[in-house]
Length: 169
Picture (cartoon, rainbow, N blue to C red):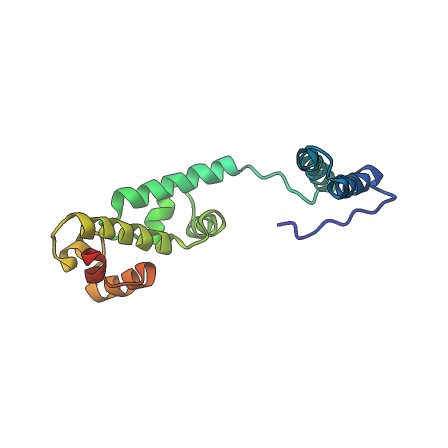
């Protein structure tokens, strides 16, 4: 990720000029100045991104393959959440290694594959708690949790109440 870009006036006079124009438009606040400022900001950002691309700061990155693989793994989890799922099986569903699997989940969803799996299971169980009278232990087991106390701990962490309190509404 880019944290900052330094633009020198001598090297990038038109980009620096855009900043001054934005400042002046904001200061004068003529009719429709907001639209002019927004347009100038877009022009400025396009110029900065072009500078980054030309300077090889931004590497070409094709996310379509990553997104396709992530969708396969998410679909696998959604179709098999009631079963025992391993990291290896999640990764294999997209034809990738375990470290790439973890990397994709971290970069795109900002959680581990198991955090995603558990959250999905918990949300499914929450729906069952609200729509059925099935015992809580049976719901936990049917959603892939083998340990009811672990299920209750995770449920409390996500919903800030026990499954029983959640069911009562």
